[in-house]
Image (tube, rainbow, N blue to C red; front, side, top):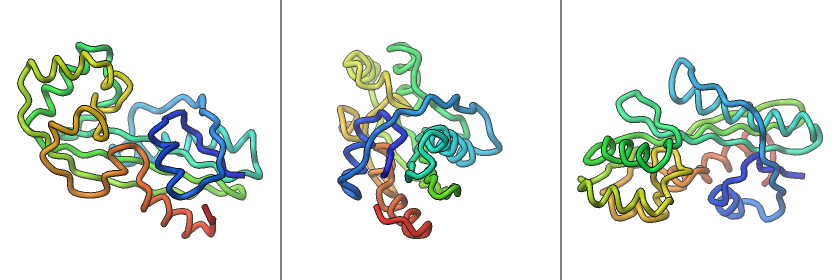
Length: 185
């Protein structure tokens, strides 16, 4: 049995590109807020999510993921309401930032990890555009306050790297991690 330890509809959709038969069980693991680097933080939180579900299902293959947005070394999580989303978006406007997803696969009592980093370049956004986008509610449950596959598309000048990583699950990196672990998805 394969279990995705995430309630994200975007992750469900992306995992379906690799695997048709999986179940979803949302992890209640308490995420860590600090680590030596953003990449380590994302991987550690992915491990916590996957491990909490694997403890209940030791014979399953459990996939955990954690995505963060990083601007100039500062980690942007999910915003605190519309005002928080507007502040984040204003800071991202006209700048390059990184999206990092940590991955963890728990299988057979072992944990396999990887991380993917994608550079995202936002064009300049006016305060009115930021306000209109934040008011849609879409940014409120997203790291960095935006969805590449949603309304923020019009603000993204370019990306370097895996677009599926920015959506929340780097499909290619997950496939390679599973292969290295000897797991068929």
